[in-house]
Image (cartoon, rainbow, N blue to C red; front, side):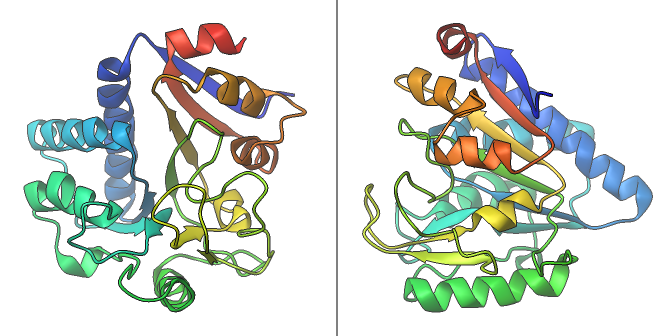
Length: 244
């Protein structure tokens, strides 16, 4: 039985607003139920279009974000004002335009060492998200991108980080992509989420996507998909056509 849903688009300009609309629907549902909505964000090129689409639609629909708590799937170990910071992008393109209070933004402290930042992030997320029987936080939604090698968050092929079952956030040293030090949600933490939405967009990722969607795939994204009953993958038609 297929454990992923593949949603295809002609290009990134169609993908971003569609995913934004779907996320805002999730937030509205949580608001109507009077429940919090805990989400983990990712960086990447598609995130810029996605955040801009969220702001535009949220203002038009008058969506309330008062119940949303923001976490990160991963962060680079750089100060929050650094151009490499995932927080910086979200802050400039999403939080400031929507006037999100600081009390709802739970950034990974990239200015600390990865080990210290990972521990602080794990402590913070456990204060707000319910935990499963394995002690993993149950986030309502995790957004992931996908790299040319099939990596997601800062979980890279042939790297041991993220494999410890009890870890929530893991320190990453000597990342194959700069900057070398990072903090990432573990495989177990991602598997525990209620929903995982993957925004697989961009040239040069056809082979990685094809491998990731295979039942015998070995990429980090394949491992995520295989660990869950359902994962939604949003991608461009040109990528999907080659991935089949």
